[in-house]
Structure formats: structure tokens, C-alpha cells
Length: 283
Image (cartoon, rainbow, N blue to C red):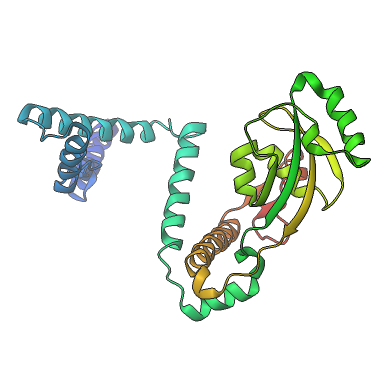
């Protein structure tokens, strides 16, 4: 009994017994991470299959669908445990996109009152104007006749008859009270943009279109009047929701910048404006 080694062994056995009694073996009872497949998952799998194949899945097909769904969940959980979701650009973009979708859906649930829409309409009247309408004459030349187009402009400015010049084209030479959308549909978006920038009077060009070259004279342009609220209500509501979504997104990012400690190194600092935010920190 006086042997020190015996004392050491007895003390170790006692400590081991106390450890087990106090819960040292509880690690064996710790619940493993749970992966669940519930009724809603099975319903979603069945409905998705039915929409795609226009029939109900067979029992064998359902067994395969549910098994694959479980395997996907297990693999995704294991990937997160292994840290495979970190620093992966595709995973990061997908997660950011999902949060963006949630924000957009939440914002668009809001329903404005008529008073809010009327105030929005009054504050942004230019957004709800009727279409600008333009009357113009054009003289057409093929791409091969660019020199003739330039010369024709000088002749037209000197009083020449536009109907005596140019190459044949099926589009009417005179376009009356057309909108920018009308012009884009006929001549292309680039031509419509160039036409919208031309002053009234005088010959200009040649301007390119999908057909070729055009020497153009704008005879008149009438700006669209502001549409009454009742007539524009649907457009006002849509623009109100767009603005609400943008504002909600900006507020959400402002909260994130307060929540996270954003670290910008010297290379990133010139390209990101976080002025006035508590989240910014230089390394």
C-alpha cells in the first residue's frame, strides 16, 4: 500500500470513474446533425416531375427522386462541413442572387395607397408623359452610294426636291407623327436615337439604318403631354414599386455595412465608396 505507483493507478481509476459519472461519456449521446426530408419535399418533387413530363411519376421514379433529393442534401451538408462553399465564386453569386430575389419579392408585396401614387405621379410627371411624335422626310441611299448621299444633302439644302433623289426603298419617304418606338421598329434603334437628337428644320446626315444611309429633315416634333393620373395609374404603380424596391435594397445594404466590418486594402480603396459608413476599416 506504500507503493507510489499503486497510489497513482488508484487515483487515475477514481478520476476516470468520476469523469464517467459526471457525464464525460455524454459525447456518445450528442445528436448528429439532422438532415430531413419532409412531406413538402415529396410533394414538390412529385409536382415538379408532373409539370415537366405531364404525368404522375411511377413508384420507382418517386423512389429515385426522393433518394436523389436526400443524397443532394447530404452532399450539400458535407460540402459545407468541408468548407467547399468558401471562396467559390459560383456559390457566392448564387447565394447573393437568392437574397436579392427575397428582397425584391418582399418589396413588391407593398401596396401603395392612391394618395401615395398621386403624389408620386405629381413629383415625377415627366415619367408619365405621352410619347413624343415626330414628322420627318428621309432620302435613302445604299451603302455603295455614300458619296451621292453626301452630295444630295448639299443639293437638298440648296432647295432640291427630295423625291427626285435617292435609291428605291419600300419604306415611305415621309413619316408622319411617328413615335420613337415606331421609328426603331422600321429603321432600327440606332437610327431612332440619332433622329431624336436632330433639331427641327434643315437637312442632316447621312444617318445609317439597317437599310443603308438616309439624309433626313425633321419637319415637326411634338412633345407628349403628361398623362392624367387615372390614365397612367398602372404605369405609376409599377414605377412606384420599382422605386420602392431600389430604396429597400439601398437601405438593406446600409444595414449590412453597419453589421459587417468591411476591410479594404490599398488596391480596393479607390474603387469602393463607403464614406460615412461605420462598416469601413482599412487593413
